[in-house]
Image (tube, rainbow, N blue to C red; front, side):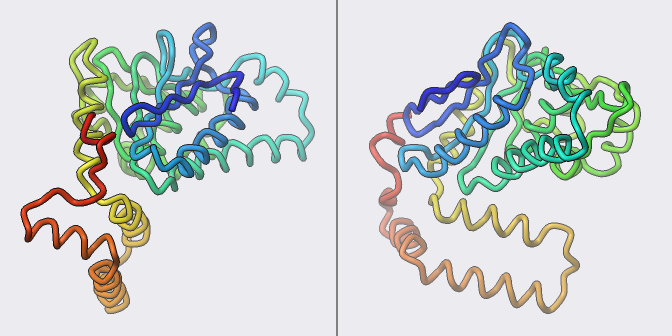
Length: 267
């Protein structure tokens, strides 16, 4: 598919979705949002893709909302505002619920919606010059559609500070707080991403998808009889699955499981 504002590359099992508006620091507008959702669905359906990476061309990951788009929004009707916000919310939901592991490749600014986009990913990898900011309150807005993902990634206690103050968070501070999973050396972010991707490649694709669903289901639930019974049922079903039997068999026979394709081994 031909995209106007993004690029989608598939190499050695990794589908990289590049925000490609470097002249505006990859700021988002309605076209970017639509194309990101399309790219996410394309990665989900492409059997060549085992890991999805979100990245930005130029000097920034994503600087938030495009100024021209914001000017246009100022004249929107209530119905247009709702439709516009819903499109962003739907795109974020699509990325968050991808069945494949996702990595945010963050360099430079990741502001407002850009930070929210990073938070939809399973793993955040940042260069030392990366900077995060929930700047919405500074202009009288709120980080509403991104809040479910930010709070899960950053934690509610730290989210209170950064959502309410609009302060900038350097990558090193994000790493200290556990928000950034890996802080790369300057210029070596792709090596850090490759290392994490290789770890994902070693896992069963269905097991990863099922585990992502388990994480969402278990999160913040009290440990009740229902949770105990449901988690027992889920592992029993996976043990009986084709991939589960293949993985255990490969482990006992000291061989590679069949999901380690030549393409994945090459990476």
